[in-house]
Image 1: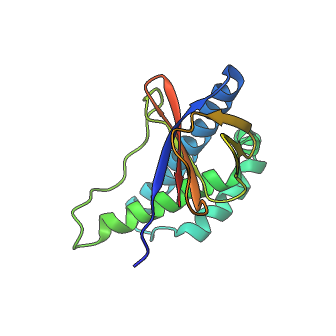
Image 2 (image 1 turned 90 degrees about the vertical axis):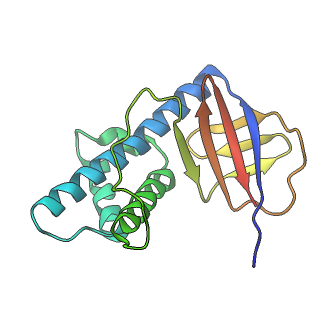
Amino acid sequence: MKIYKAYKYRLKASPEHISLFIKQAGCCRFVWNKALEIQKKRLDSGDGILRYVEMSKLLTGWKREHETAFLADASSPTMQQSLIFLDRAIKDAFNKKSQKRFPRFKKKGRCTDSFRYTQSFKLMGNTIYLPKIGWVKFIKSREIHGSPKNVTVSRRGEHWYVSILN
C-alpha cells in the first residue's frame, strides 16, 4: 500500500497573484455549477447522466462560446479536475452503499475557494510555478520529500495556501 504525504504552506501572494487565484477559483466554480445544472436537467428529463469524458468535451465548447470565453483565460487542467470531482460526487450519490448526498451548487463569496493542478506545476526552492499564474513564493517551514503528484491552492479566510501531495 502506497502512503501519500501532503505538505501545506502559506503563499506569499502579491495582489496580482491573488486576483488570478480568485479568477481561477471562479472559473472552476462556474464549470462545476454549469456541469451540475446540465446533469440535473438530464436527470429530470429521464436521460442518463453524462460521464467525465462527455463533460470534458462540453468544456472545450464552452471555451469557444462568446458568453463563456473567459474560461479560455484559466488553466484547463484545474477546470477538468472540477469535472472529475463532480463525476465522482454524482457516482457516490447514486451508490447504495454510500451515504453521500447529491452534489450542490457552489456559492460565490465563500472563503473556501480552491483548485487543483495535476500537471505542469514546478517547484524550485520556496517558489512554485502555477500555469497561467506564474511563480509564487511560499513560506517553506519544512522540506518536501519525494516527487510532487499534485498541488492544491486554497483560501482560508484572508490567506491563500498551497498543499503539495507526494
